Image (cartoon, rainbow, N blue to C red):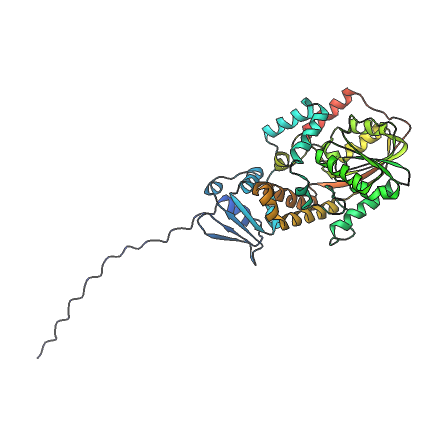
Length: 417
């Protein structure tokens, strides 16, 4: 019987090392911050990896250039500084990106608080006013003209009939509403506190109103002076602080657009306005507002409005107007108008990015990009408001409370801020 052939020896299987796949790196605080928004977007990390946020077609892309930024959580100011210094790039829907600000608790850093109090209490008022102007309006008129309306060149909000209205039409509407609110007629004399770039001069002088403007801004003075001469307007522009200005005779009306934020000393403001107006004369003022006086985002205070700047506190403005002999005729909320104005400004700034960067540099463009785009949700979400107020000067100079009462009220305000 034939035996079965022996099978070839089978090689012993080699021992294999079974390794578990490396766990994915935990998302950084930065990734989690934007993922919590649940808005479709992309974050490109320094190693080239793309992190998706939300679901759907990405609305934005954030490119992170610095690993240092991913290691430790930072506050809103530091995140803004990372962008303006080039550690971050922001592309796409800026409003979606800026939604992340809602997750930060706003606070004023100690150094900023000390600078602010120094400007408010230790710096003479006229010098403090000029300090605000000099730190903000130093880039030349062309910089602002890239994003402001071309009709009146307003650096305050325009008034819209509908959301899609052209910015220039909204600027013209604001001037028309002012003309009606102040009950202006040919032969009347109007004081424009701030003067801007001459919108009231161009609009009111051809109707027979004689306009006098006071400004601390040299570029404004030069621009309006040239405008008066070129168009042969019956008008005057003066380079002086309103708080020291003493007219030869009182005016029929006063207008001030977006200047009350630079003059938080409402008592002094209305005291001067009362002296500059005829009895029965009207004043129209407007501006951005906050529910608490001296409340301002840390980024804005450091990079945009330095010095003793404060958004208008409506209740305090009304109180001081009444204290100093004015009767309040009209108050109107215009927060949505300011939201639309800043949206238009932000879009125009982005359209002129190339020219702005070539002339003023990438950093200034990024600072104003955050400022203008950031203002849109601030007004939309009621973090900021806007109002115009019309008041009539009475014969009686008002109650004018003393220093002791004012100090007590100020301490209460600061304790609650």
